[in-house]
Length: 201
Image (cartoon, rainbow, N blue to C red):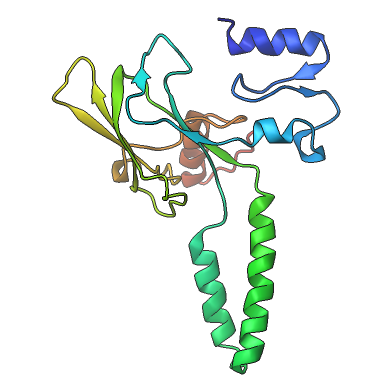
C-alpha cells in the first residue's frame, strides 16, 4: 500500500491534488467548493459491531468519519433572542421558520469532518444506535472496543473535546488537522499565554 506522501507526490506530478488518502483527489484549479468530487468527499460512515481493528491495516483503524455542523445551542440562543423581541405569535413563528431555514442552509454548506482513529488492536463490540445522527456534547459515547491483547478491557470511544487547552477533561482530543498538528497549536497557546503573539503558517 502506497503511503499518503507517495500518493500526493504522484498525483501532483499529474496535476491532481489529494490532501489525504481518505478523500477523492481533485484536479488542480477546480476545488471542492466548486463541486469537483464533492459527493465522493462528503461521505460519512461509522463502523458496525464486529469490525476488527488491525494496527497494521491503516484503514481498519478508522472507526468513523462524521460531518461537523452547527451546534444545537445556536438554535436555542436564537429562540431566546426571538422571545425577547416580544412579537406576537404569528410573527415569532414566521421569524423562527426563516431563521431555521437560514441555519439549515448554512449547516449543509459546512465542509468540516471529524475522522476517528483507533490505534490499538481490537474489535468493535458496541456502536451508537443508527437513529443517533447528532452528537452535540463532548463525552457522548460512539463506540466500545474490546482490546485483543486484553479481552477484559473495553475502551469507550467518545465525542472528543475540541478545547485542547484542557487535556485533563477528556482522553479524546483532535491531534491533527489537514493543515496543523495539535502540537503546533499547543505551542502557540503556550507562547500566547506568555504574552507573545505567534502567527502559524
